[in-house]
Image (cartoon, rainbow, N blue to C red; front, side):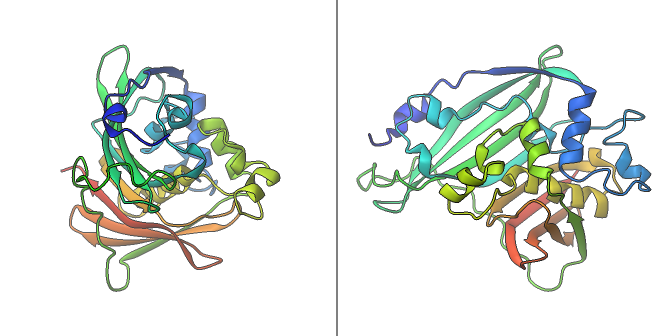
Length: 289
């Protein structure tokens, strides 16, 4: 069954409500590397109940709508979906414990042509259920490799915003953050239970020799690096972060984040230090004020 873009744009993705605790906030921070250095008290505030703060990318792991491209009537070949790009915009403080509601909607469906796949973009709001305050807005593009050619030459529903260009020259800052062999096991407790990140058989069926780390964990680690290098561990200064997923990293490898400064705007990329392969590209982040 081919994609019907009008159907996707009108699709009712069920809202998700979740209550999370300080324990969940600390677990997520541990999954993206906070607390690795026991002498770093500024990092400790993200994974210890004393003066606890939420890591800025935690909204991507809260009240997630699940695998709706598979579970709802979408017409998408879900076995060939790849997470393409991710953007997070923060609208204020992230509570360390709260009851929240997540509301998602498809905003664009782009046909890349027969045999070339399609891009489905959806947006998700995270709202404090008690105060009705908007906490964060997330925009995600998924590359649907098996679904191109549905528009028969028609123009895309909307033009995609261009991704930030890679920065030239040597980076202004480099932050190396190690992952642990069990990092993916922590990641799946936070949000994504996909066996690709746990089971050897599932990983090999997808073409990998062993389980890979979640892309959104790599994304969180990159934000961790920016909070460390640019914000002196004051995550409230970060307002937006986006990137393109360009490669994979195995649990136990090191994420090396290269950062270029341009006043309150920053560009970045992340590589696997051991294999010198790019994990995240076209990264962009901005600070408040």
